Length: 134
Image (tube, rainbow, N blue to C red; front, side, top):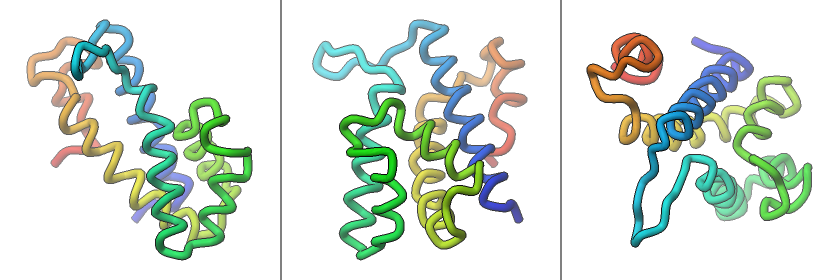
């Protein structure tokens, strides 16, 4: 079982690898003719976490998420949340609540947009996907 800091580090590493791959390969998902990169989803995911924390009455989570300011004004909020969690800036309950939801979002994105089985980047997907796919 991983500690909250270890899980935050794992998700942060996965997020960074996905982001780097998406940009390095010039890959984008086309939605109605608009090019979208991984970084475009950061505020959407952070907004989702904020809305969920309010909907479930998780005042401590809401306070943690809004600590740096309004989500709309935060730069790279998912990266920053993970960095703060890794640094131990949140209590255990807040960290676990966020990591469970962030893990689902990031791993879902990785499952949909990870490299093909024969991808040469990152040593091929067999090496690259260790730790998030079974």
